[in-house]
Image (cartoon, rainbow, N blue to C red):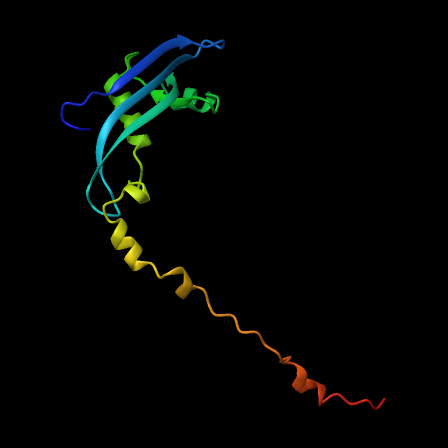
Length: 142
C-alpha cells in the first residue's frame, strides 16, 4: 500500500439460517505496484467483496457451502487484520500491467511488433492446378 493511504474495510458479522457464523466484507485499498511491462510504478485500487464462514476445525470447513470460504479462528477469537490481509493478497494481480495505451513503454512495444503488412504472408494466385501433373499418368484403359 502507498505510504499514508488507507484501506477501507466494511465487515458484517451474522449467523445464517443454519446458524453458521458468517463474515461478509468489502475492502478497497489504493496500492502502488510495479508494471511488469515497463518496470515503473503504477497506481491502482484493490477491491474485493467476500463471504467467509468462521470455523474452528477442518471438519466444519468441509461442511461449508461453496459460497463461503472458510476462515479458521481459534479460541473463539478471530484475527481481523489477518483476515483483511489475506483478502488483499488474494486480489493482487499476478502480473500487474498498465493499460496498453497508458504504459510508458508503449512506443517500445510498438517498435518490437512487426507491422501488419509485413506479418501477413503474400498470397499468390495459382493459375495452374498442382495436381495437373497427375492427369498425364491417368490411363483410360479398363
